[in-house]
Image 1: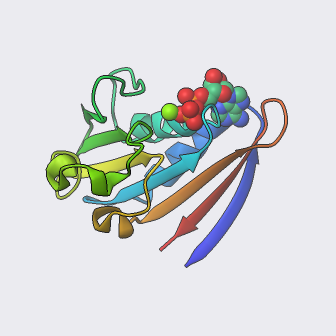
Image 2: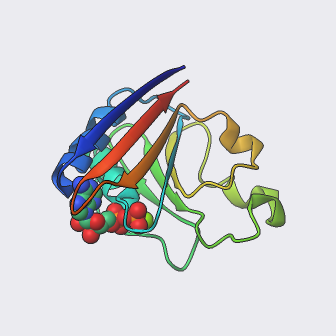
Image 3: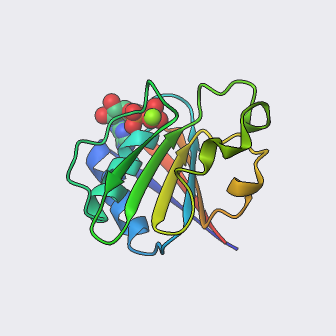
Length: 142
Ligand code: ADP
Ligand code: MG
């Protein structure tokens, strides 16, 4: 396990960090992205998805738990589990099947930490407000 911490000073730097992280991802990987509302989770995912070749606009899922985007060599899944207040265990276990697994790289915002499917994440990213436009971003690998 390795931990790194960076501070970004604007959304572009957070997107750039997302792009950097994307370069180390492989088919089937899951990236957990935690942090308060407005901390920059979707911004980071946007940077990562762009770097993987997604050209569609990356927006927060609102009517479903996730979006899937065609990327260069893969499908990018972007899930937002924020609304699952009962946690994943209260949901149909098949809920995530369309989003995780071979042929996909998945970014999951606000993961409930109770899911086996999510226990094998390659990266866990935690964002915190650090004053004005600054964000502290911790990345745990492995
Ligand atoms: P979340 O998905 O965590 O709710 P978003 O990425 O949707 O957060 O929104 C983050 C908001 O904060 C955006 O309006 C973005 O422009 C702003 N922002 C300001 N500074 C930063 C920064 N350093 N990194 C990321 N977002 C930032
Ligand atoms: Mg978001």
